[in-house]
Image 1 (cartoon, rainbow, N blue to C red):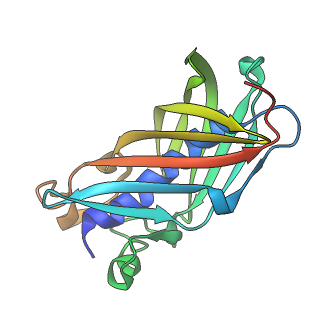
Image 2: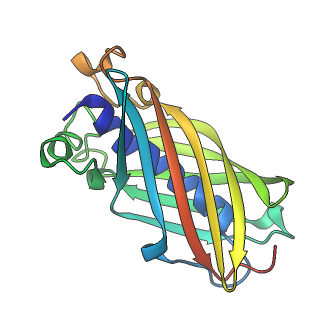
Length: 194
């Protein structure tokens, strides 16, 4: 399993979940539709893109497009659930050099502010915590509605080494790139009209 794959599995999904949740929170009880939602990530190993996803995560949200100042989004991601679809790589990602899931079983995102940027697009600012390291992030989110379901999509890039993902020999960015793209699609019910 490559370091890029491991990092992508951990960092990208976490960031994606956090951002999606921030934009998906709405008036009334809001629920994520798991079968229509995912948090994924892409890293590069020796220049080749490698995709992964988080299999276990949870989002709590309260999003009202008319009251952004009162809207909140929070994500919790099980770092041991990162998957690249390869049993060998999936077994490496939870280890100490990567996510150290035994010591840091969860990555979290907590929104601190949501800003409308026009056209049902938002920027969700907040704190992303992975492997004990905390960083401020701003996640772009686009919302679309179809019936009772609001879909939040977006992507952002994190630096894996900022979160100590890929330590020791894996800190060499010529093997596994430092940039990891986190992408998400969250289907949410309970959000009022945009």
